[in-house]
Length: 189
Image (cartoon, rainbow, N blue to C red; front, top):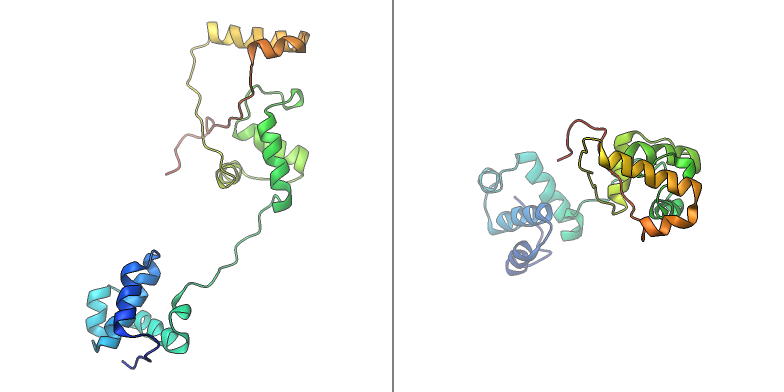
């Protein structure tokens, strides 16, 4: 295989050993082996890539060195919630549930409705979870309660809040933003 000498063998070996991107390190390793004089079948056995893949990497290296071996940015589907509205959305989530939300905890379905009502964007439930994850929110799964005392306490607190909002701070000294995957029957790995 013909390999242009953009870098010395020592430089390629150093790049291979220090590269943090495993895909790029593998490509640099293939170029290093080719520049050492190994044949394509020998490189295939060492690297574990196909003949055409190795030939493509060598061709790209010959055209522009290490820079050509790096992955090109790939365009993806644009987000439904515009990037300039994400900060406002985060502030709204941090504010917690409001009376018009009709819930005491912002979970996935409640946030889905909030996005449709206040931001005019329609997300699937999975899309909501992905958006929250991308924005740095973690999943908090509330424990199941068997009703009884906890349900009565929640109803009493909600009733107190609805009749006299000034008493709210006594029961809720600080707001907690929370979302959960309580409506999904399986976990995301």
